[in-house]
Image 1: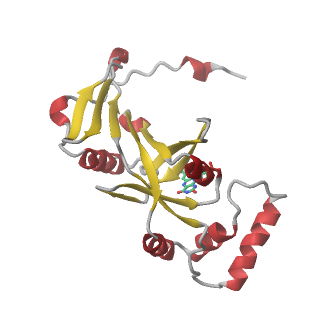
Image 2: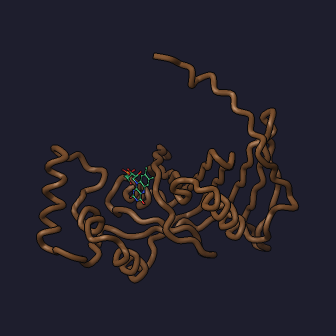
Length: 212
Ligand SMILES: Cc1cc2nc3c(=O)[nH]c(=O)nc-3n(C[C@H](O)[C@H](O)[C@H](O)COP(=O)(O)O)c2cc1C
């Protein structure tokens, strides 16, 4: 097996990020970078790594899709009984990380997480295709299953019960990560990357530069 990938030495030279480019609201800044990623046809620009931890601080991370963004925070949907759901019961803090290789940009966001309202989850669930509704209702996410066939059979049983759309099951819904901090990272040559952060304070968002 070749280890050629271990020798990767990309030079990031596409753009810089200086203080004059920061928007007042970090949410607007996130929207701007998401727009840039969308304009560049990045596949799944809203994919973000959500990291959670147990109450002992043991971390775990996985990719989810951001489904909502406003001044309250970033919303994603999942199974409340999944591993991430259980960890968020024990420890309601998480981080979100976006990485768009094409743009040589990373964003890190941290903060507490809360469930969105039932009405918000209902409204989002209703927009999903029936086959996605059936699978998310039937699948015991993060549990061991005997086989793929067993999972398909569970989903089929729900599909038989609800041939079309179905109501949202209680165990599935949204979370909102309420940011207390953001970091916007732009790759630069010679490892001198740009890192600008926003920290939430009583007087609003405070910005600073971090060493790379
Ligand atoms: C691009 C991508 C998007 C995903 N979006 C979601 C999502 O929105 N919600 C979700 O529950 N899982 C999503 N997943 C699956 C998760 O990565 C993960 O397998 C699942 O949520 C179980 O994680 P857990 O066992 O840590 O709770 C996505 C995976 C990928 C690769």
